[in-house]
Length: 356
Image 1 (spheres, one colour):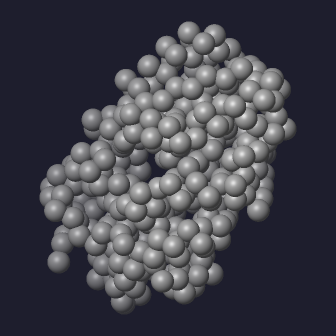
Image 2 (spheres, rainbow, N blue to C red):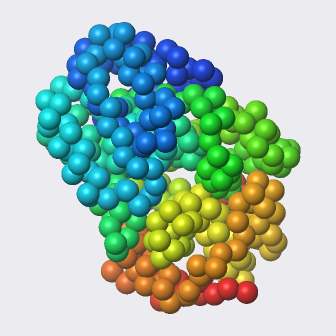
């Protein structure tokens, strides 16, 4: 399956191909001239796939090195970025060379940030290996690293030259890592794709079910993200719809300590909470939060967390990138397949943090 992201300034393709990792060198050769390439990965993914990808690239005439760091959201910071800069410098990278992100969302965000800032821009490709990266993080050109104040506070917009998705690699994910990705899949269905929601309703929710349907889950989710990126590449308006569940979700990730709550888990909690309050305010159909909760439960996403302190979460949200002055843009879903942006005074967000 192929999805064309026809951005006027930087068009590229998303390829979805089972067992495609075995021809990744040929794919890169169609996009790049012979050059130096650094594969950026984490230690878990690198141990599974980095040597294979490296050999594939070398067989096509590329000069390749691998940089890996400890897996986890805790590593998504400027300390890791600086270590990569040093590695690139020692490998002799120039502006005509390239970086490949091989891993999940953390790897993609860090590698993209590095590619966009080292020498003001290197070639860049995404090979996402987690479900959450395949349906969300690898598409759209957002890069970023965390600070102690907020998630993704530092970042750039930097589109890849291509995205290569092999659903078969999902077989190596742990249960929690696979399920996490369903938070973003459910989000895509809720904001823009009733066909995807119907597919989710028909599924049993088991690991085997997710893996078997992964091609379609990825394809539909990528289409949703593609359309919103094309409409608003630099996230100034309509693309905000992709943030459904994320305002509270990002605050949960930060306040719990990065890595304690996974991103897709936090998004699920955020979607349920926002919709529950939106119902009370007459902004969402009655019973919708229960439908979302049931869907998240079916796929094994958490419905509660002990890391919920209203004031702490509120303070974290005040540092959110979607805050402008004393106002915040919060995404609500009135009904399945539709979403809209509500602009509100930052104080009103306290209402959305009230638990049952």
